[in-house]
Image 1 (spheres, one colour):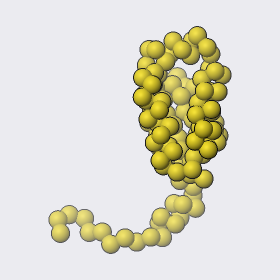
Image 2 (cartoon, rainbow, N blue to C red; image 1 turned 60 degrees about the horizontal axis):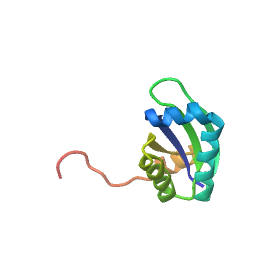
Image 3 (tube, helix red, strand yellow; image 1 turned 180 degrees about the vertical axis):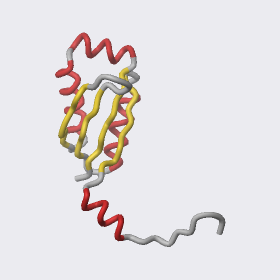
Image 4 (cartoon, rainbow, N blue to C red; image 1 turned 135 degrees about the vertical axis):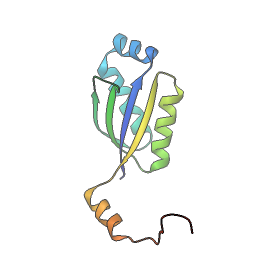
Length: 106
């Protein structure tokens, strides 16, 4: 199953929700959303700095990843960025493909 890195930055309302309910409540809510998409939460960590949450999830496909991102972002409590993660074997396969590409004007 494809893996994704979900990076979230809380808006003020989201930060207040974390303060009120705690970090484990946010992790549970996120895990529930991932399960609803037939995925699995691999890790969920809070961070200090520009981003507030880093989570690694397995989801069936990119449509499920987009649904998760849109649902969270649409709630208005966090801005979310999702990154597709590749295994070393997937990179090996990508490196073995040779598409015909010529840089510059054709």
